[in-house]
Image (tube, rainbow, N blue to C red; front, side):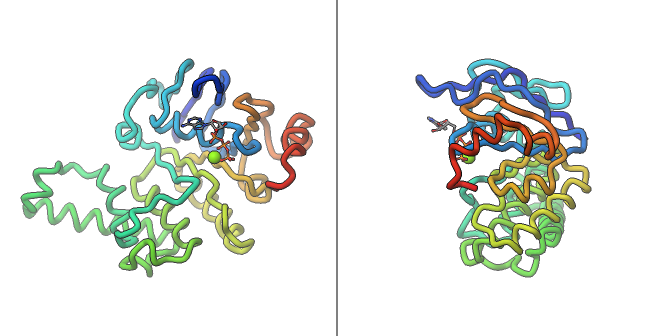
Length: 255
Ligand SMILES: Nc1ncnc2c1ncn2[C@@H]1O[C@H](COP(=O)(O)OP(=O)(O)OP(=O)(O)O)[C@@H](O)[C@H]1O
Ligand SMILES: [Mg+2]
């Protein structure tokens, strides 16, 4: 179980304050939901947590250590993996190769070993492939292992992206709108997947506009609007919170 804490995080883009002194905690075995209208700052939270954006104020503490300002690959190696709002697979690679790339961060062999193709390197490669296939099987896409990622239907690409993140054996998994573009049966399948991921001991932060999914799987929900936390609590508390209702009534088209 991990413990990831945002402490008074502010992010500025020129004159825009995208996040304003935002604090909340992810981990400790919970599935945490992060909701809010379009432009509220949800993806910005992911970009701060993964080292893509720099915060102008505050701190991010992961298992007792500040990770603020660390490079994205360092944070990834420490065990924070993510998926993207717009799918970002290596489109020309096969499904298993996509997962193998992620798994490489757990490999002890450096680039020189990869180039020389030593015997131990080949063994390591076989192990990485096996672990990548396990991740594909976990997400039910192992039968597409040798298919080129871009040839898969959209719903399967979304599942593959989650499988790729899982292949890195993360402590924390950040999912940015995983149900976007899914049909109702796919999104109900996704809810079961998120619960299974949580049972693996991976802590999940879920950004999602599909409230059925959010209310169905999250133990704890944080609601942001214009970069400010307006509410935090369990699904019941969030659904009845007047500030949350008001924030969403302004954007009925998204629901
Ligand atoms: N790189 C950037 N440069 C300038 N402004 C940005 C940048 N990234 C995000 N923003 C702005 O920050 C605000 C928060 O954006 P963000 O993408 O985090 O919202 P979001 O909650 O993920 O929205 P959505 O639900 O539409 O995905 C928006 O006003 C957005 O335009
Ligand atoms: Mg977003």
